[in-house]
Image (spheres, rainbow, N blue to C red):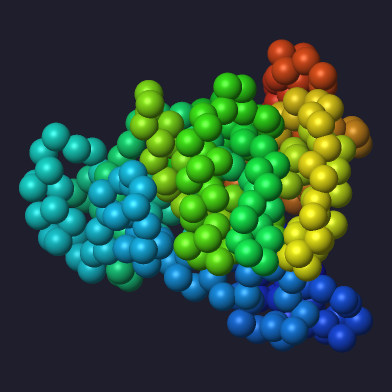
Length: 318
């Protein structure tokens, strides 16, 4: 296994996983894994997702049916400048054609440089939320929940668009989220556990990304509903009806990022996960750990998570 962020390579994890393919019943994918390396017969859920994870292909398929930010695939900075100048009333961001977690997303400026084609997208201000749902073989869905996404939090040391966690469930969820999720499930013939990222701007609902896989809200959903989401994914993929439990707790997930190149001596704690050795150097902008807190009262969960956030940074070793 890789021992540091400097040497981390997802392909190494894939190589290790391939050694166990014959020993497992199912393969469940998370983000960024190259599913083409694995036998289709063992994959449970969506097996063809290239036209979804490619953000421009997704835009081409969906933008005539749903409200989406204006999106272009560009090959040069000059091309980007020309487009931006044609829309003086809009702000723009750039993002990789493929990728997750907000990595590589930046506000556009004329000094930006890039080598490969990228996405130039209209910047939409609003609330970042996501839906999580189960799709069956007829591609109808059961909505599990909606969540608030925490994006680009300076309190968590993140850059503007970096994923920082979730609050599950979303208070006063917009009913349009269910309608849109249902339609997209059918358009893409989705199966199993899926999610969609949205931006809510007053009464407008913008579709941002479709996630044809287990999402970052996985642990939040399991804690909030006291359910086994992996089993629910398998059952719905096999067209077995899943009973969604009643809400038990609010769950807050935070991902604090290092404010500088540092080491952290974090003691064992039931609500702090993904902790590296105190000898491990965490580079600036890289995740330190994951905070997971649940409570029947949302304010209590948020307060407990904030206490742990402060403690994480106090565990820095000078």
